[in-house]
Length: 403
Ligand code: CTP
Image 1 (cartoon, rainbow, N blue to C red):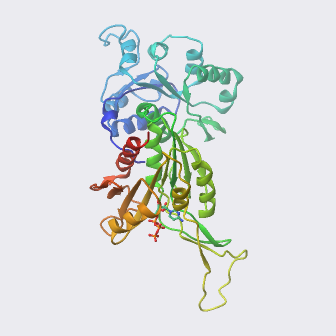
Image 2 (image 1 turned 90 degrees about the vertical axis):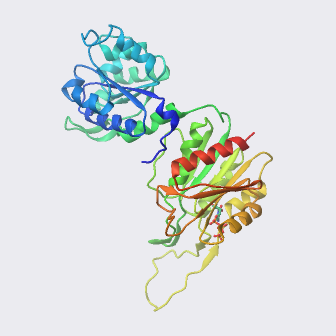
Image 3 (image 1 turned 135 degrees about the vertical axis):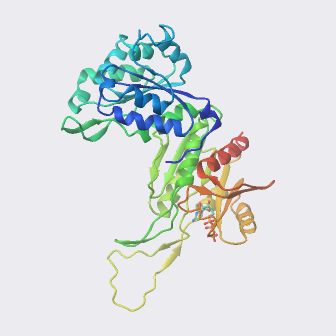
């Protein structure tokens, strides 16, 4: 997982509440993720939570004092756990037992964690973890519904082996997912709220026969980072992606496609009311006259019939609405600036991001890239940066262009 280490995250305070469940060990990894990306972390843990992880572990990982007892002598003053809630920007309960969910939904405060929770008036994120039958219990579901209606964000548990021996829905979501969804609440602004940004990512796959295909090495990293940054502007964010290992926030509306034809149809349909379209996908330039049956190796040589695909970006440039911003990418191995400028003009774009791929800048698959922005008004060259930082620069540039 890559994300940029942002200046703004440095000033963010994250409070993690841990209750008594075996998934408490995963909370340790969650703390590490926040610390890696430089947010400040404090933890508050219930008495049962301390059966699973120790205060020493939490203190060491968070580099902060751990709050566990409302009337502990070591507290500087008796309402310290309340002042914690002023300090924190978000409060994440991971793992959350049926007990804490029930207490919170019914306004019960009988220890440091539940008291802090009731006193907290900003975004609460809850990652439940419990036995599958407990999770399905109507009383638990009713409490979850009450909290959802109050604006609490739930990260649903996954299906899998539970510590109690059952295979059911009840496993706490993975720390990566909790972290990803939390970033949305920490980073979001209303800079582009009411706008729609459409992004294509990854590669397309052109089938030769039922078992073979032609494609390229595009990983989707840039497109996914762009979608994250677009989401943080408050814009409605739509991601149309080819095959990829990348994952994105549930707040992004994602559609998976395979062939260039599928991508064309989806992008053209979604672009109608989009304020900005960013084509970062490496769309195949040729598709194959596909065989319905597996091709046999009867001959010493063979020829594939390749047919030119529709250029999605060129079509977007042709049907472009007034005020709509079109952004393309140019992947070049030589005469980069010249070729990118040609594409900018031919495809009627507002901005083109040039990446020149060579041994020094592999671009495909790497977390880093070296890019140049080219628009009608000139060009800006950037040093090697991580793809998250590049995505932020692109979205900042687009924000300035969108009226
Ligand atoms: N693109 C597209 N539809 C295609 C091919 C490319 O929308 N069928 C888009 C890409 O998403 C990218 C831009 O066009 O934003 C430029 O893609 P690139 O592969 O660099 O250039 P091509 O236009 O395909 O030209 P060439 O391969 O000859 O360099």
